Image 1 (cartoon, rainbow, N blue to C red):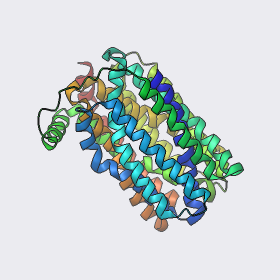
Image 2: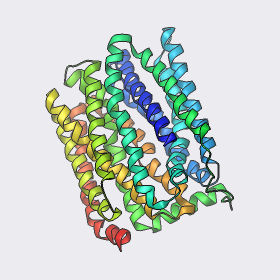
Image 3: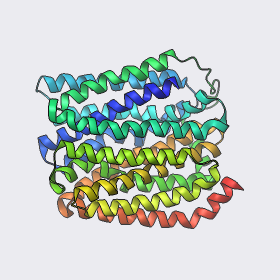
Image 4: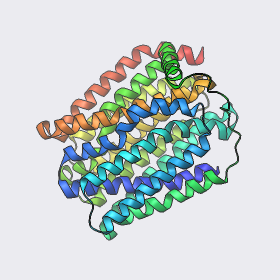
Length: 392
């Protein structure tokens, strides 16, 4: 519980900063392409590093590595503060800092997800622990951006960066106070590349794991990048301000929070394959509706649904993967799961950012939503196999 409380405070700051950073980039440049480029810079390290981080997550002390990643992110937040307050911040500064944060995130994600089983100890409690983690994350996603939107209007983006830097102290303190016996001691039996290939082969031959990874990769590539372009929707399509952006992101977080509560109420993992399928379809249809809406009330309602579908899809997949994976390969499979959306999303952000000047943001995401729906239908054909593997 110590970790979850610290993490929820830290994530609140992270979502406040993410909103402020997106607004700052679009305020300075009015470029949807640069918004996509910054999103690309922040997440592309995950594509290359997360699989290797997964190998290390099966080898190293997870708590100590998490302390290091959180400390690095804290230092980057304070660097942003210094650049902003001295009025010397440039787009290239933001891109470099985003890349460094991306390196931190590439290691943080597989270590953090694999660390959950060490904290709870009992695999029977894993589903509830993951649901609790999702609830706290999405509580921060709901509250943070709303606060951030008003902070930008009142105090400027710099205040958001300060809050984020300070918030990291909560999770770092909680990690330093914990005393947990590592479960992965002495697990490094062969070379890093060999263990990485072993994890890939294991995931490919375990068909359920492979189908789930392909599904989240498609939605990570085509669906999740829409969050990077929310400043465009807020200012140019809905004709709003930073508060509008805060409300949109907050509504998305509220839907995600409800999705986390919904997952927490499930008694058995046997229902998860169908939930994942329905959530993927809900997300795709929601993205289609949001893309064509130019009414603020309708957009807030639809993005709420989008948030619900997003968490039910991604957190449900995470829960299912952690239930069926072998313990000695947990870090590597969780890393592939993280790479399937964090590593793939920046490629989608860059591609879609390149297309938006030609087609416009709305048409671009109408097409993306349609392709997400095709991926959901493809997964529906594999549902009987997945249900059999999970429930017997």
